[in-house]
Image 1 (tube, rainbow, N blue to C red):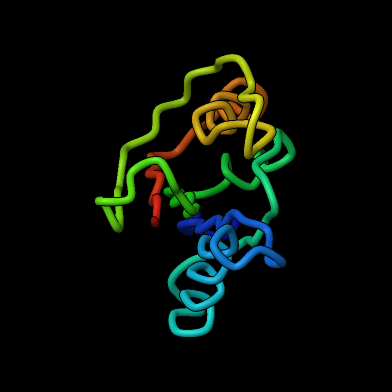
Image 2: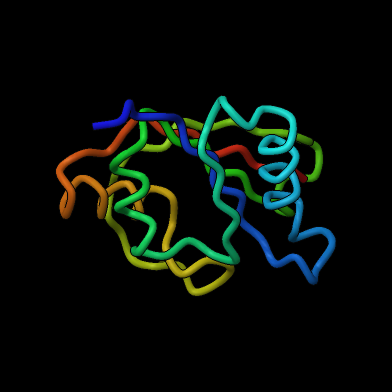
Length: 117
C-alpha cells in the first residue's frame, strides 16, 4: 500500500477567467511541486471526489470567491458535515465531499478551503 499524500483540488471553469483561479493555482502547484501532493482540477465539487479525498493525508480545496472582495486569500478549516446542496456554484460543498468520504469510505482527512478573490 502506498503512503497517503496530500491532495490539492482546484475548482473552477477554465473558460471563465475569474472562476478559473482555483484550477490555475492547482496547476501551478503541480508544475512547481510535483512530488509534494496529488492535484486534481475540477469544474465543480461532486460526491465522486469522495474516494480520492478519503485516500489523502490532507486536502486543500482551492476556489474563487466573490463575496469578500477585501480578503484576497481566505483559508478556512473544513469539517465533514452533510447539508443541503447549494443552489449556486458547485454541486456539493467541500464539507459534503468530506462527509461522503467519511460515510462511504471510512475516512475524512483534515481539510482547508482556500478562497481567492
